[in-house]
Length: 130
Image 1: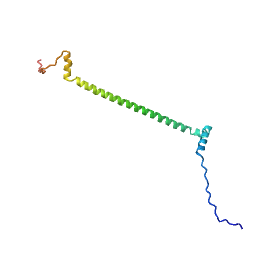
Image 2: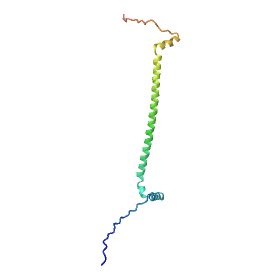
Image 3: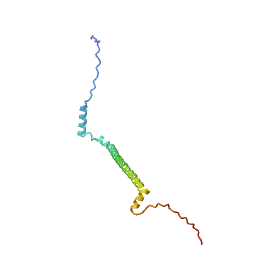
Image 4: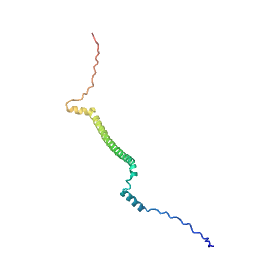
């Protein structure tokens, strides 16, 4: 008879071997530079990649055009402000120049004097004697 060993062995845990991060990067780089990336699987995805590239191009172009329009709008706002200030300045100058006292001064320099007498109105009765 064999002696029975009643002592149980502790459960051995299985060790999972994890790949090292550096090794994973080097294998990926090796695959890309080695040409494994350009296989038939990649060519099956080629239309999809072209579609993604087209979408990226449209996105970039749309962003560029939107920024250009924003710049144009800002420029037009500045120009509008300048024109509004110019309008207000011109309007105030015109108001000042069209005052009766200012007109009298300018006309007096030309030899025309202001009339001090009130204006007489003439009423004409229009009767037709035909």
